[in-house]
Length: 186
Image (cartoon, rainbow, N blue to C red):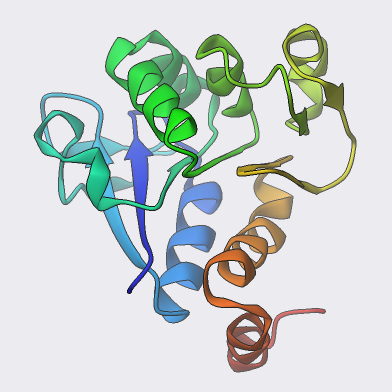
């Protein structure tokens, strides 16, 4: 079975936090579907990069995916947090014991969805106080895996985060192969 991950995109998403996981997972053989949370497939990043999503979140069957990914970006995370469809999607993936992953400020979406109380997490340093009351433990590690919840800190940790996801989904040999292919640091 090919692993299939759903990326949720909202206007204002952080470019590196989207592109590094997208590229590394795709290189590693993971199928990625980009879903716009808006009513238009065209989504604009924090710095104006236009990305056409594969579909609208409202059109997708969540049972088709083994995991979900939420990129950071201040305005993007605000849009994700404000969407009841996104919060319900996060809860559905979590309740079905699928992978729920987020980077930078996006773990705050997981907190609002009410799924962090039994998990150690990390995030962008500026939202630590916001997250701490809603999680089992807060960590300053660059990437944290706790059960089926994977979180990371920021754009500077996006590559590590992506390789962690690839290793989880496709195994350490595939992650090593792609690291070597792109000359990534160990």
